[in-house]
Image (cartoon, rainbow, N blue to C red; front, side, top):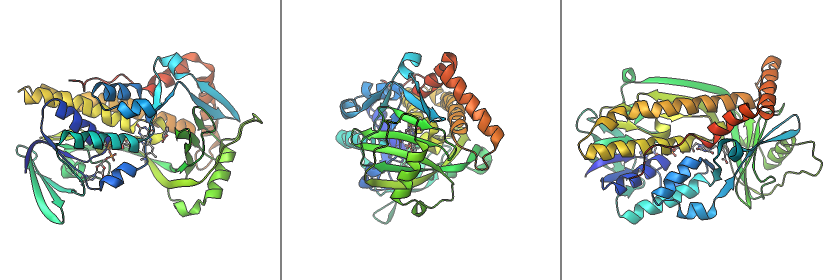
Amino acid sequence: MRTQVGIVGAGPAGLVLAHLLHLRGIDSVVLERQTREHVERRIRAGVLEHGTVDLLRDVGLAGRLLRERMVHHGIELLFDGTGHRIPLTDLAGREITIYGQHELVKDLVAARLGTGRPLLFQAPAVALDGLDDAPTIRFVQDGRPRELRCDVVVGCDGYHGVSRTAVADHAVTRYQREYPYAWLGVLAQAPPSSEELIYAYHDRGFALHSMRSPQITRLYLQVRPDEPVTDWPDERIWAELRRRLARDDPGWRLADGPILEKSVTTMRSVVVEPMRHGRLFLAGDAAHIVPATGAKGLNLAVADVAVLADALGAWAAGDTSGLDAYSARCLSRVWRVQHFSWWMTSMLHRAQDGDPFTHRLQLAQLRYLTGSRAAATSLAENYVGLPLTGGRT
Ligand code: RFL
Ligand code: PHB
């Protein structure tokens, strides 16, 4: 089997890239380890930046998204029992979109299959060879070893994929930070209790109220990274959410309902530099991980592939300068977003040892943000996201 661009991984990065290449008339093959059902059911991100939605719309991928999304113009910061609204659109001129990542992945899979170009499920890549001049992806299909020869390989296989590990250790610098807490995420059949997202800083730990639709709430609790999900029966989750999301307003209550899904996610920041090794390009979570507090991972994945699609378009026409600039162009955005995600995470999570100095700093920062238009504008600008460059044909 042979193609121009071999794409490892059918998450948002791989599927959006495949579509952008299709629009440029560039052949690609997408290899995905999991089944279609699995990738379409994986509950993850919910917040899309304005620039991400614009790009998806401009390239014809946002039909259902634009019909079914929830548009939000603000978020709330809740601390000391009081909610403070950050009016994102007023401050930064752009809104955010709430639309489940698994719904987006369904749309992207349908779009890819609609082009008739190859997307192979249950086809894990196991090794990448010849990355300097003649790449081959070794993968397995129906239990048999197969090979995909390509001009370029794009590793869109997330944090646990093979692409990053295919590069010799001495050729990569890995920057990382582990946080001493994790998120217990739940999806509940309960109407949202607020029209907008609530980020709550509480003595007992961080909590987040988000949503997927007028009937479905998405909620998160700060927990210890080693806490098994079995320690969290539904009743304990609701009791803890009620405590951490409590507010002085006597009329407010948290709506509850059946919990449909729950899982624990660790929090880490990772950047792998450079994002190019010979003819291998890394994109999305394969190249960087951000803690979920800033709601940025999926948006960053789309930003990478928008840059890469332009570069590959120029390369197909004989100009390699875009590919040469790919890593540096992406990393400048990646580090801005890393800073924002680390900052939001550090401000909103309770230190495990309850260190009173850190606590005072966190409260001072929250009060500043909710009392100063300039400080709130900085948060808003980062939260709604920097404009995306590239991606359109
Ligand atoms: P993905 O989505 O992990 O996709 C990688 C794909 O590669 C496949 N794969 C392989 N395929 C073939 N061969 C192999 N050897 C393979 N190894 C792996 C995998 O099966 C998978 O299908 O990476 P991608 O495309 O880079 O997308 C990144 C996003 O998924 C991620 O950054 C976001 O989910 C992060 N994130 C959020 N991002 C946002 O922008 N806004 C949010 O609100 C937001 N909330 C979140 C989040 C992530 C969370 N978790 C669970 C980590 C909330 C949570 C709780
Ligand atoms: C979500 O809805 O899943 C979500 C929202 C905001 C975040 C992270 C995740 O910061």
